[in-house]
Length: 315
Image (cartoon, rainbow, N blue to C red; front, side, top):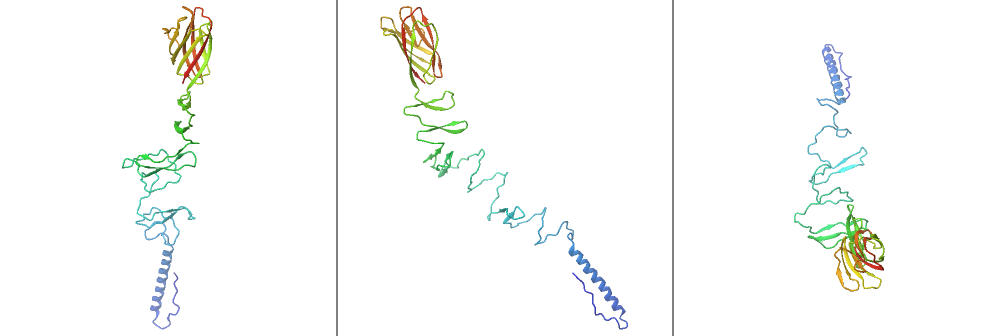
């Protein structure tokens, strides 16, 4: 603001001294008023306010202000105005990072769910729902269901084939490939996973009837038996024995020399071969081993000949 002093005042007539004084006084006062206004215009703190006055077109940072019913459509996160937060044009509640919220009609793209909790539908069943495929690759399709009964499913774990089975392995789903025809399912030797196997094996052996008593290990079974059926005979004579063992429980029936009559043996045995009234060789299961079994042989007096042995082993 500028003040211009009057330049055309007539002060020459006599008695005009008072007028000149008044004009001079007014001139001084007007100049002071203009100076005060200029000072006021330049001030940034005035009228009892602390801080800079906010202008409608000024770029300023406002702190500790409460906006009542503001209309904010977009917020910028950077000075260059490249990172924006857009608010929905609807009456709604914003979701907080640390608040408990219920989301409706939301689509999650590539979410990472840490220990999610699946709620129970109010109707108590799964109606008109679509479940995602559980797989280890990018193939597969969804499974639709109505009520509690699934109408289709697709669980893909590796190279699947009809007849494959699934089991839990170290907290994940593992696939057991189907076995061959007439295979049976067993637990593996380590007791950690199922496997397919035939579960039956036959092995043969011989025993010199003059051999000393002791333990003999028989191998080639291919698994640890749980049950053994044994057939035995001496040369081509009628002396023979049959028996079975479940784990270490043994039972045998043998023929009496020269009679062809079979009878159960009072001493638990898997094999009992008697050549005369006092001479014999008998055996019972001591242990079932990983690939066979061990028999404990007992010799009575002096039997002779060679025994042929057959063992039918069951897993």
